[in-house]
Length: 276
Image 1 (cartoon, one colour):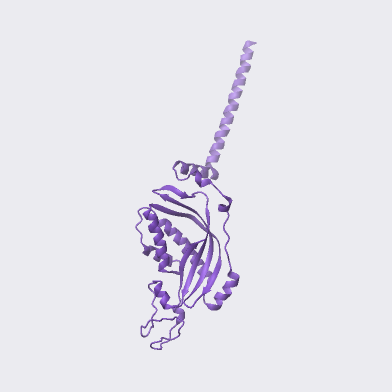
Image 2 (cartoon, one colour):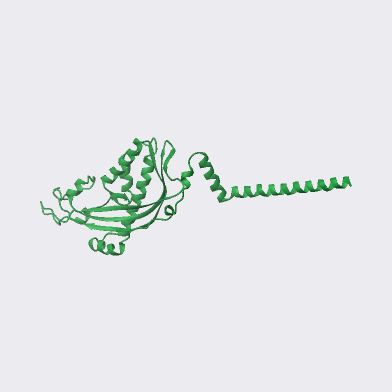
């Protein structure tokens, strides 16, 4: 009997070990499957960023209002007919897309140009924004350059990543004797934060920030205002005698009487980017 008891005990122990090994094997297999899955890859990536100090607890303070895209004040239905009446050859849709491109490119430039060791100048801002399909005022480039300089002086990097524009619309249309102004409004999301010497200092690197921007586009009708904006590379002179054209609504030169094609002298320029 003692021998039989030992045999039974041995079988029970062996059976238990087999069960344990089976469970361990299942756990290992499950871990391997998770590690190879998309979710597992994301988990490992975040785990590594936490280990490297790129992501911290502050990055996971998800709030519902941050996850919901902001709405825009879109008055297009009322304003587009007015704009088309005043400027029948203007493509408002094309201008809206170009103004959006300027907004996104401006944020990209703030990120690139506040990177440590970057030696860019204001000329890069003016050139790359003007390549978005619409002109920009010199004052807009100077404003962005001022932000770059301020960040550099404090050793900060301004980071805007994974930019997505959710909604857009026409928010305002205003006219005066010297200029016409169209304001487009955009709902935008991105990862927005700041670093110093590669170390996180503020913002959120995991939860997208939802923002709303007004982009103001102007059409300058008076040459005196145009000069005050310090816009270079556009000639507002009579093609015959070279005399300055003071008022672009005129059909003829006030000095020599030469006909002036005023439509060519009107110019649309992105003038301001305002986060609201």
